Image 1 (cartoon, rainbow, N blue to C red):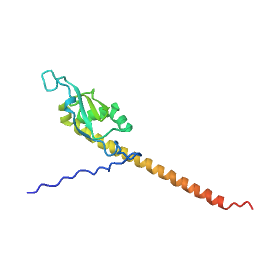
Image 2 (image 1 turned 135 degrees about the vertical axis):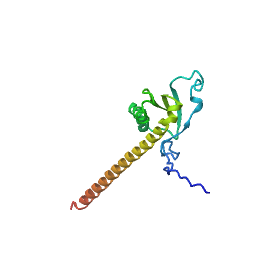
Image 3 (image 1 turned 45 degrees about the horizontal axis):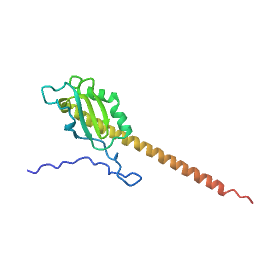
Image 4 (image 1 turned 180 degrees about the vertical axis):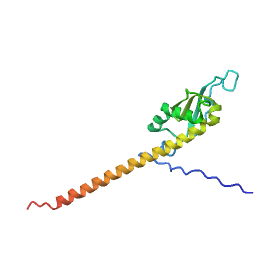
Length: 165
């Protein structure tokens, strides 16, 4: 019996920077995998701490706007509430470090039991918000350019009617 084909959402094509190099902030931001060698050596041993930092690799560099939203303490509170306070500690903290998300004061079990899915959903929502804000800025810029063009045409038409004869 053939297996059904799976599809993945289309990602925007990578764009270029003014110098022609690929834009390191193009495309939707998402998490790729946990950086295993960044987990404390005590994890998985009898000396495992009750909470620790789990480094997760981002798909690309994080923009300043994304970083501010990710590191906002309200984001960590929201994620903890969504997963359930009994399953995620109150000291959960998210820190962006280069192309890594440091999920502080958590455990691998918390990530497995719902926190990872909530993080992924948050980043999808953040991507939607960033795209919407970008569209609004683009529409505003287009409207300003159209207004300037109309003004220039109006002034030009008025100037053309004036004769110094």
